[in-house]
Length: 113
Image (cartoon, rainbow, N blue to C red; front, side):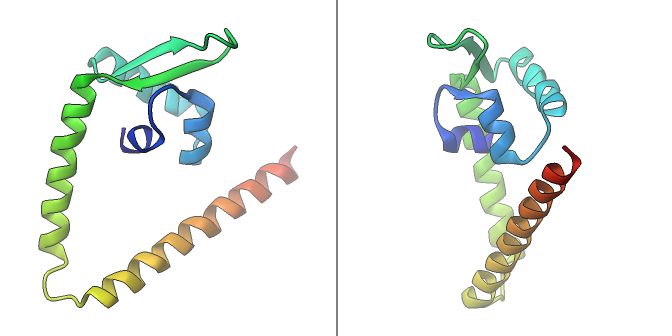
């Protein structure tokens, strides 16, 4: 939901899967659950009927806001007594790990085809 919110309204399912770095089947299961709970709307693209677009509902935006508050509270608690520059280095390192994993996954997918 956070990634969808960051991407904005009317994001395609395939675009969300690509950004998340996950396959479509598990993403579709998650999207179906979010839709059943009223947090997400799926619609057909007016330009291409094969493309499904995703939009957070007001209920989805509200739960996301609450979730963000909870995450920020816990982040503040777990980062107590850690210098901001150390947190920055740690975050940059985690981001580089994520980038490296995405690159490896893309390379592996190319060699499998």
